[in-house]
Amino acid sequence: MPANNQVKVKYKVKVDPAVVPGKFALEGKFSYTENKKIKRVEAPKWNITVEK
Image 1: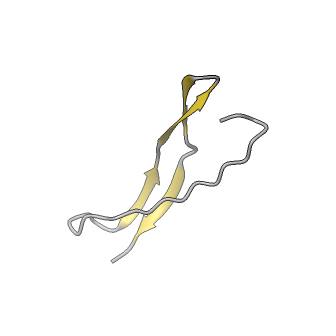
Image 2: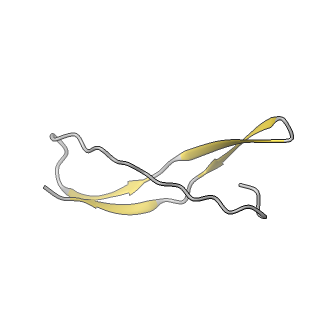
């Protein structure tokens, strides 16, 4: 993402009831427009824990 801008991202995660609890890596990609061109970046990986 542009270095001079700050972006706040909020995830809402729904876990399938069949998922076994444990630790997982949450990954993602973001797209934005800069000078009328689409740019894509990968989000940092976040470690999450799924509990029941």
